[in-house]
Image (cartoon, rainbow, N blue to C red):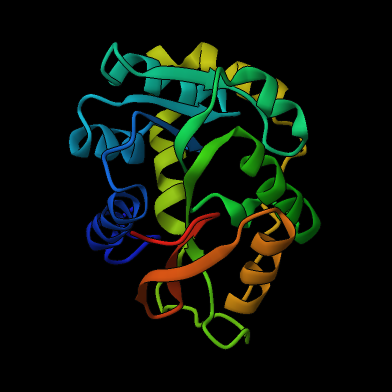
Length: 223
């Protein structure tokens, strides 16, 4: 995650600061969408140890690792963000929803729909934090010289050699056959329009490093 989101620690810190500014308090319930093994959700729990934190993902291997490695107080939810059915997996409403390096997996039309769906699971005044590749001027994203696919490919190659992951890997092959990342890149204006169309009143950049940005979306004025 540090490779794919340069400056990740500062990104999350800026987002969490924005949440406290907007809410005027620490959140009581946090949902991490597409959270994988839960590293972002863990960061949220460290910041807000009294919060109820849940991580949601579709990948059986990542869910297996999340259940094995996350604190028992955290919920791990299996659901696919490619349809609106993911909302049935969640319970209650949340003060914060996190979508960190997840949105690019979805096609643009589906990403726009997801914004509107997230709005329905947020408490009034709740905050959506979205971090991904977001060119400031809406042009093509700048690519680093390094091979961005290499760390992820190496990770899966190593996972294939772990005996404990054999069954989750078999489940993954069945559940995710044919699924690929859309590699969607939306400019800042695209996200602002999608947020407004989805029911949010405000979309602002709270952190940026190169073509990566953290946006905070909410329906109230910051306090």
